[in-house]
Image 1 (tube, one colour):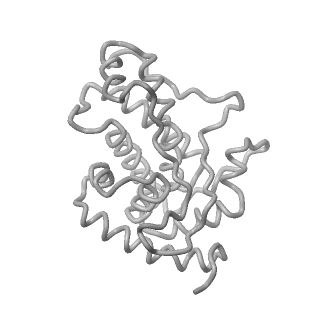
Image 2: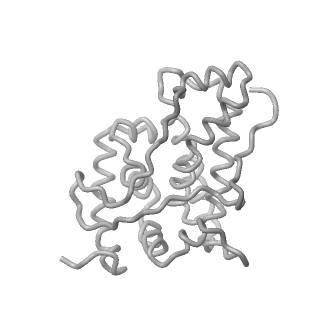
Length: 223
């Protein structure tokens, strides 16, 4: 698409999107939801309609898509990379990339699966780049923190994030998509471009590895 890409609009405090995980991991059963989901919010216009409007030059339609997906995209990025500022940058880049490549979007797929795939790929690429530098960047400390930063740097959130960071990136990704966003196996398969059986296998492995880490951190009771 032509023209300058749209920037993500910040709220009055200039902060990035936030979510609050109120529940903690207390079991390994797939039917149990350990975290509060951050669902994809739908408006009266479907994603497909908004994409069509964007392709006809309606920039406001793309702003609607940004508003709809910026919070879940930010959350997914943060939980994978483990750095607030980097997650903000990745979220911005996701929408820049999606805007510039919207003409290549295939209508037979769901838009949210497409944009989640962009987000996960950028987040995993970031993790790989950081590993090449042989040091994970610390969470940025600012003189004045907004409420979102205060939550993500809170003791409980840091413990959850530290546990996640001890998992391999591909295991981290399936946990984020399943337990922070409530996506189905089929949706995860489409986003990650792996078979559903691989999704289930990774998720099982991720749960098995995460549970003792959360117990060690004192977030759940020992069995």
